[in-house]
Image (cartoon, rainbow, N blue to C red; front, side, top):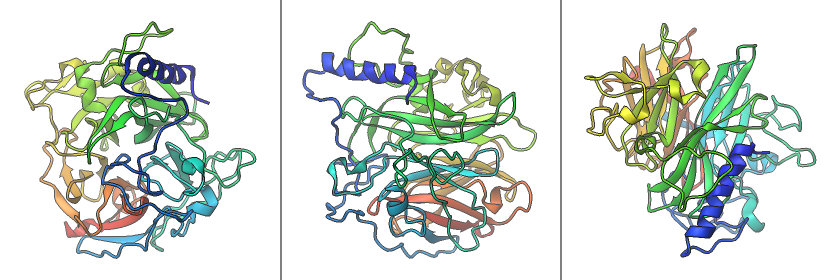
Length: 435
């Protein structure tokens, strides 16, 4: 169940359009999920690579695993879809999904958050969910796969969030109105687990509220926000104080709460990536990019206990000014950019193997950069999976990769990546000794 603040923001969005957007005719509960797996029209989902031919198959259009083995990287297996070893269609009603943002839950289990998700392509609504979660205890990739256990209702350590009476259906995490030009979907962009003062860990997802999809690689967001879970991802609550409004609502409304104003620099943090500081640095770093695929990367930092307190964040304002205390102080002259555009769908982590920070993103292939510090300077990008071999997006590092471990460090980096034509996620291995 969404929190009161989440429902309030959703209601405000819907009411604003109903009052002020006379050119748009909407009805509650409708909306088209513009993603490729079931042949929906439009430019589609968080990656925006165009749509595929409609699929008459309940299981969607997933094809054979792309064969790619280069000098640095190799495609290993499907993580999701009916053709994966996890058979996510029959076990979780997932025929197609993307992203697979992965993080350690603080107890050694890897959680993975996915974007728009579809099930049976032949039923009304195509079992569309705006986001889902999968869990795994698998930290051994010697068989070139990730194994996800069954989902069990009420079991917060099982393979996914299962509701009673729906044993093979992964539940949605963060709700959305599902209304085009209002809020078409809510997409996770970053996630992290942080300890609680009284013990245990809380899970956090930073997500974007998408107002509408545009042309390929372009989309508009309402806001970004942080949702948290105290039960290992079973249920999520959006903290209203973390909302960064990107663009104002269509009309002014008398709301029962204060919606944060649209600050210009909020637009720099609509899509995000979290990274822990290297040994000796107890900050969490948040890399932000604007909505779409064509912006630069900006940087914020905070102490772990302050993740929900945006007034305690610091923002990188460039080498001449350093860190500033308010998002409004980020200069717009280009000096605050840690990576120049275009950069998007980032995954960042400290690598003990390289003794550097690693950044993955996609632009004409999957690219890797390194830096000694989060603010850079970052190296020129090195292409580790060329464009068209296959066409991939959203490279999301797996925290159990040997190259990311503090102990028993190895040369291999494993990451999830998505392919639009199949609208599913695959596992890729990169040999960092070949860089």
